[in-house]
Structures are given as structure tokens and as C-alpha cells.
Length: 403
Image (cartoon, rainbow, N blue to C red; front, side, top):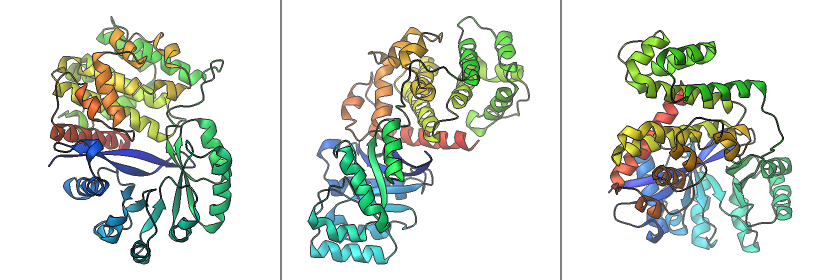
């Protein structure tokens, strides 16, 4: 049976990825919304640790995995490597004597335990005593309660994780109160300060992006543009020589690169590197997410018969977080970039062919039903193929970041 696993990053107080929460995303036979929680978790475990190459889904980071009471009592956790996982108790769990006995056994074996969507109730005291991590949904709890919980449990040696963090200010507040782990989109939705001026280094990179995507630019002009930034030239050649490009012989100059891989691929790689420079002062997860979206959209466009437009799909995915990288609204940024009308309309949130593919890539990042996004594609894609594309995009992204 073909399975799909999504992942949500969990960042530390420095904005560095600490772990991923692995989420069930459906299979060919069961709609996402109808699958029992026990089956969903079993599917995640199977696809993340046994069907796929070990550790590839979580990129070598720890994996937070949701567990129901029955899965704890059945000791399914024993099949997982304790050094690589965090057992996450769902919020609807009741601390029955049978469950508590299993949890004590789990802790005695050295596993890490997290309480999901925690809201205090006296009945949860036995669970609190065993917890290593407490996750607080700041969209459900008011900020006074969020602060109080940190002051209550941090002194007990419990690590606090703030969920659904969506702004930089929320991140700063929670970090000040003692939270050390964060889950949400604060890294992708920064404070927008319209009057703020971009640093000169970012202005020059944005200008370089504009030149690279001029519709009438030719090989010679593009080489001249890129030569104006020696560090970018060096990195571009390194990327193009990577195994991910499938180049058989080492490329040593820009003209040779253009001749071998073509103008569109050349622009694509230049865009990747310029985006990385624009996001250099942001959490690394922001660039990882941009790369994943770009590659996922590119691969999926091939699959649904739009290979001749795959470069546009790739660029749309890469640029979908440009507002986060620069702290500006997307509207203010796309007017300065000579992108196609369809890319611009997609980035502005309007309905386009590319929009359905980008929406699906974003749905894989969110705790949401992906069925409607799959249905929105121009041609239906089998779940087996979608799962393959998802994993290939994850692997490609990790490989590029290692370079």
C-alpha cells in the first residue's frame, strides 16, 4: 500500500531545526479524514522507518510521532529507535492505570515523552511527572496562560514547546518566557515593516535576480551579470557540478555551464543561490522549505504533463517564501521582478494552473487534509507517485543544503 508522510519542522530557540513532527497524509485506499488514529500512526511508522530508507523522511533529525493510548499499551513504541524519536501523547488521552504502567515502562527504556496540545487538568498530573516535553498550542491558550505554563513547568526540568507560532513577536515572547522549542510558521511569516529599508547587500542580490530573469537576456549577458558576483559564480559552478544535476564532466566556467545545461536550468540554479543569499539571516528551515516547494512543484508538473513549464513551477515554489526572506509583502516584491504573469498571479494568491500544485506542496507542510488539493490537479496523480515525488523532493533538498 502506498503511503504519504508529511513533516512539520520543530525549531530550537536559535531557529535551527531540532526535529520534525511526522504526520499521516493518506494512502491510496483510505481518505485522510476517515483513517483511525491508530492506523494513521502505524502508517507513519511503517513509511518513515521501514518502507523508506531509515532517517530519510526526517533528514536525520528526531521524529515526533503521535501515539494513542492503545498504541502505548500495545507497546508499539518498542519498534522505534529511542534515540531518534519522541513519543507524543495525543491530547485526548486518559491516564488510566494500564496506560500509566506502559508509560512508566516506556520511560524506563529511555524513550522521550511529549504531551501534545496541553491544557492543564488535575487528572494529567501523573502524565506531567513523566513528561520530557510539553507542547502548548498558543492559538488555543491565551498568552497569559502560555507564559504561566512555562514558569510552572520549566523549573521542573520539562522542555516547553510552543505550537502554532505564526509571528516573530510570538516567537520572541515565548522564548523570553522559557520556551526552547517552536512549531509553526513564524519563520515564514515575519513582521512586515513597510518602511524598513533592505540592507545594501540584499538590494544588490534582488537587482541581480531582476537581471537574471529579464526575458530578453542572452547567454553572454547572463554570464556578464553573474561575473559581477564572484562568490555566486563559484557557488553556482559547485551546485551545477553536484550529482543532482547529472553532469558527467566537471564544469569549470560559466559559458561551459550554459552550453551544457541550457538557459532555463542556469537561471533556475542562479535563483536558488540568490534566494539563499536573501534568506541568509533567516532560519535555515526557510530555505529548506523554499527548496522543497520548488523541487516538489517541478517534479509534479512533469507528472501531470506540463514538463515544458517545469522551470516556472520550480521558480514559483522557490519564490513563494520570498516575502518571508525579505520581510516585505509579496505585492511589493513581484512588481520589481520580470517573472511571467502566471508566476506573479500565483505568488499573489490568485487561481492559476500553478496554484493547485503549489497549494498541494503547502498542504504537505500543514496539519490539513490533502484530498481536496489532490483533486484540484489538472490530472489525477496516484498516491504511490505522489509519495515518491514527496520523498524525492525531501532527499533532493537535503542534498542541496549539504552542498
